[in-house]
Amino acid sequence: MAGTDAMINAFTTLLVTVDPPGLAPLFLGLTQGMNRGERRQVAVRGSLIAFAILAVFALFGAGILGALGISMGAFRIAGGLMLFVISFEMIFEKRNERKEKTTDAAITKDHIHNLAVFPLAIPLIAGPGAISATVLIAGTMDGVAGKVQLISVIAVCLALVFAALILAERLNRFLGVTGRALLTRLLGVLLAALSVQFVVDGVKSAFGA
Image (cartoon, rainbow, N blue to C red):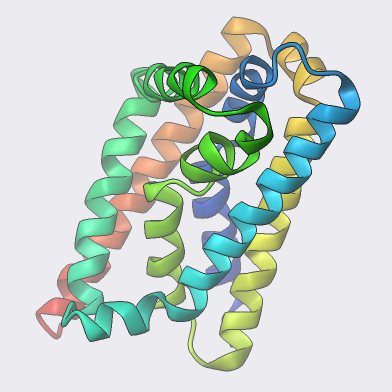
């Protein structure tokens, strides 16, 4: 069973990686032309699919790594470096540019009823960063109780994502361009520190320190 500090660390890492405030304006662009009911359907479906994806990696991610012969220490280092790249993109506003390109491409290629699956659930919500963070955190939480706690943390994070999507129009108006930029940069700095901690833990684990 994980302690309070581990739970807070897990929640912070996942929430910062998923970035609900950053998803809000992208969701608006993705669902342009839809009414409120249609937007709600897309938000519900996308959030549930993303939850299912992250829950599967929380439960079986370590087993998949084991089958591939990848140690948790090595994955922590790789995952930490990946999260650091994401934090760098957040601080210098590269991440939203990349996400917006993904969104634009999807609108032209996919039917509107599939938007909840792609690109909303994958890769905007449950992207490589969120999946990596989930597997990394799962490796620090032992036993059934730890996994249940992690699933609970994922559920809370995805509930906040759903709330951000439902309130996207208001949130976008409230934050404005300056508010979104400030919040994204602050979250990026926090994620950078957490990602370095993952690398440090991975090095210790890999070298048996």
